[in-house]
Amino acid sequence: MHYIVFDLEWNQSPKGKEGAVDHFPFEIIEIGAVKLDENRHPVGEFRQLISPTVYKQLHFKISEVTHLDIETLRREGVPFETGMNRFLSWCGEEYRFVTWGSMDLTELQRNMVYYGLEIPFPMPLLYYDLQKLYSLQYGDGKEKLSLDQAVEQLQIPVDEEKPFHHAQDDAYYTGQIMERMEFEPVKEFLSMDYYRLPQRDEEEVTLAFPNYTKFVSKEFEVKEEALSNKRVSDVICCCCHRMLRKKIRWFALNPKLYVCLAVCPEHGLIRSKIRIKRSESGGVFAVRTSKLADEAEAQSIAEKRNEVKQRRTVKNREKRHRAGKAEGPKARRGKHMARKAEEHDR
Image (spheres, rainbow, N blue to C red):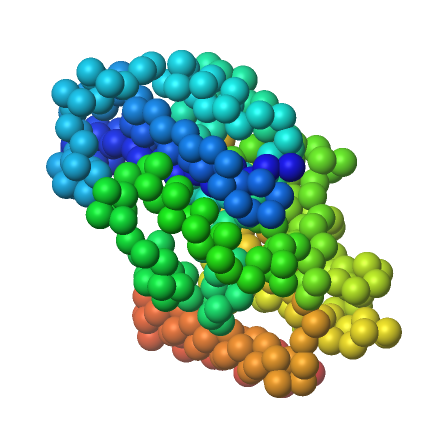
């Protein structure tokens, strides 16, 4: 098993979103990678410039950051199909992708689809997001450092001939971080790429990690359909995998995030979250995570649920008030008299 640590540079329309091609916002202009052995030692390098065919003028920010120019790409670059086939051949048979962040694999596959190439990667496509693993190992698991910040923190020498924001050089520094960091404690925390999603119930994915589980649903047309699906809304214990009774039912913290609290008779309180995400095809899918919770977390969830209820009550009261104003005083008096008559009859 090898680790393929790779990085991409891509271009976009000089006009931004207005000039972007549907489902193709970024065109890859450079693929860079290093290959590490099972002990995370470098055993090979790869670099390939890609000649652009869609966005033939470099966005000024891309040119400024990468120091590439369109003449160099046309002169030294190859068609994407050629470059991608060379990259896959160099990767070999048994490997796991490693990236700094979560965007590169998505954009790689998006470019492959645009150019009509078959995607040979397994489903689900699991990989190591080293930016996330670095945060888990050296931070709070939430703050995400940039590549140069992590390099500085680990006191990795910066080579003047290897500037940041070149695909091969960024892959080199990512590989250096992976080689030097304490990788074994976080090795089990694989990430899943969401570009290709389950299409049927039997393809849905459940991943088990040391302290939580993640469920990735199939695609749905709308959010309401996803939330009403029992496989999405059931809460499963992250330890014994039994279905649980909900102590606090699902409620929305925002339109894309839902929370609930359940109880396992063996393992206690379980906090579960559903995140609604947009799929490549325009539909939605759900990612549900479940982990053990303590009393303080349970109290926090209860307080948030009460806050949501209070906001809903205030909103409904304001809505009724606005509706009453629109009706006018005569209609309001009529409703008041009707309520009084109903109370008298009772």
